[in-house]
Length: 286
Image 1 (cartoon, helix red, strand yellow):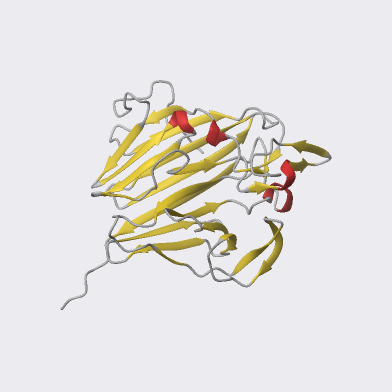
Image 2 (cartoon, helix red, strand yellow):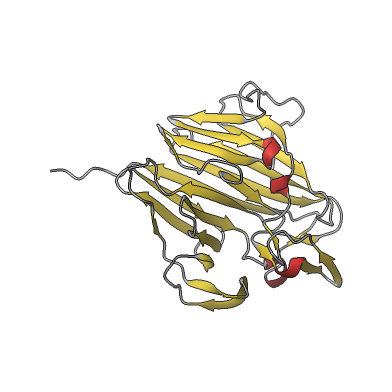
């Protein structure tokens, strides 16, 4: 993943609170590097698409996604133990709890790059990069992640955990999800297994397979339609909370450090991307 020159970032759009605000068309996204490079806001026109408050918005999952069973993973013959932060499991990686650095801010104010070094409790040196870019006309947002090693190779995953609001307005329609997965990973003791079953009706806290690439549409009635796409096969959908729904494109399934290891080497980093595109549905004539 190629960065712009990171030596002297233009911080004219970095707010006093450290947030970076990007704008294009009628869209504005706010990134908070000090809070795990979390997207704390995504506004389109006069509506907010991301749930607000601590732990909400949209955060980066790396160097693993979802739960790692019992906090244990293996790299070849070496076994590693991660701190348990979801019952008896380790969840959602480490970089969401680290302060990132702004590496570059585009002159047009619609894209920025951020970096963070992998650190304890992750046992391998490396770096994670996130590039956030609004479409020129403000009709979409592309997020790119890269995971690199600064030493030995290691298994890794990367993805995003956005909390999309259930309603754009208090009296507005509730969001509806539209997607057609090929399968759903069977869970055992709350952990996704390698067994793929037929997709089941919600509510969900489940990982789905989409071999042709992630493609999930969220619709808030006739107010707004948002498509979440990625070239990856895996997406987790979590809709068990009253205030928000999560659509999480990721490079591997939960517990994937063990079940679907993707090795990051000095010559082959892990790179993944997702695009969120929105539009206002046409109002029927009549």
